Every structure is written in C-alpha cells, then in structure tokens.
Length: 221
Ligand code: DX5
Ligand code: ZN
Image 1 (cartoon, rainbow, N blue to C red):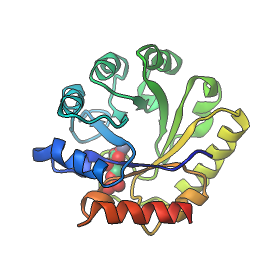
Image 2 (image 1 turned 180 degrees about the vertical axis):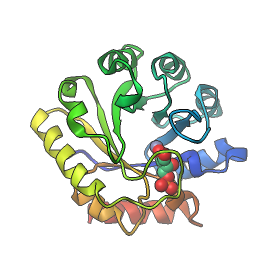
Image 3 (image 1 turned 90 degrees about the horizontal axis):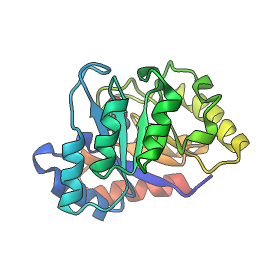
Image 4 (image 1 turned 60 degrees about the vertical axis):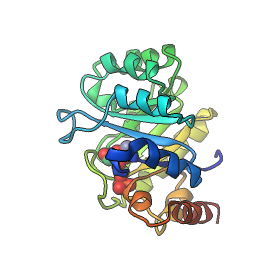
C-alpha cells in the first residue's frame, strides 16, 4: 500500500472563486485536486470541463489534477483534458465502447489512467486490464452529486479491489469517492484505500487544514 493521498473534490468548492479556493485547499495540506466532470447525460448533473482545468493550471495550480470523467462518450474529451493539464484521467468502463482503447488513449496522451466502479458495477471489468491502469476508483455513492451518504457496501468492494491490486504486484492506487468524512475515513483506509476523495466534508468545514489534518491522522492511526 502506498502513502495516503487526500484529494479534495472541487465540486464542493466555491465555483465563483475556484482558483482561490483550490489554492487554499492545497495550502491547507491537500495532495491532489479531484476534478469531477459531469455531462447531464451519463449523470444527471453538469459541471466543468477542460477549459476550467486549463484555467486552474494557468492560475498556478501545480498539484496533480485527478480528472474523474462522468461522461458518455469518453474518448473524444480525453485529448482535450491532457492538453489542459490533467495528470490522471479516470472513466466509468460501461460508458466506453472500447475500454482497452480508451486506456491506451489516456496513456498515449501522457496521463495516468484509472477505471471507476459505481456501487453496482462489478470489479470483473479489471480482469484483462490490470497491466494497463494506474488507479482503481471505487464509488461509495451513485455519481452525480456531492454531499451524499457513504454506501457501506463499498468497504467489501475496497477489500476485493485491494486483493486484486496486491495480486497484480503493480503500484496501482486504490481511491474512494463519495461520502468520505473524518469519522469514516479510518475504516475506509483499513479496508485498503490509499487515496481519499472528499468534497463536502472538506469544503463545508470552517478550517480546511484542521479537517485534512484530522483525516490524515485517522488514516495513519
Ligand atoms: C460524485 C463525485 C464526488 C463528489 C464527492 O459524483 O464523483 O467526487 O464530489 O463529494 P462528497 O465528498 O461530498 O460525497
Ligand atoms: Zn469524483
């Protein structure tokens, strides 16, 4: 298992002051920026795209940008995000016609690639691509909105994903997304996650540094 990464989801940041709020959460100790892309088609909400990613880079954000694509189709937006400064690009396998092709597209564009699993999406999608991915993202809510409640079944799925990753012998990150907070992050880490997305729990807290610090202590402890 690799060192813990805290990746605040800027879906819950102040969109009218996105650069400042992103810089603030990074200064407060965040490792990555989790960037939620929703298209009002694959999921029932509409958020931000490559132009906003590029604008954050231009604003001076140097931390890894972890792009979570909740879009269909997937492929045509990948090169745009790579050009806009994305570091990792993850997608939902059932939203892609050709999963192996999409993974190749992401890696050929110079980004790391991840697969995302909804609560009802089986991990068997990993069967033939473990050597092609850098990250597995387990959703602990149904995608589309911040501020939802953590679905406890995600813990068993994390344990199974951890087994698969360890068996592969590769340095694949195991990320969790949805309803993560200071109270449940310890159990989530114990189930095998090493990369933690949290939106509302961080951005709705008064003190980002205090919340991120408490999360890190719960993960290490
Ligand atoms: C949900 C998004 C999540 C969301 C997490 O579709 O993928 O990244 O922003 O928000 P919280 O932490 O509030 O559940
Ligand atoms: Zn996300």
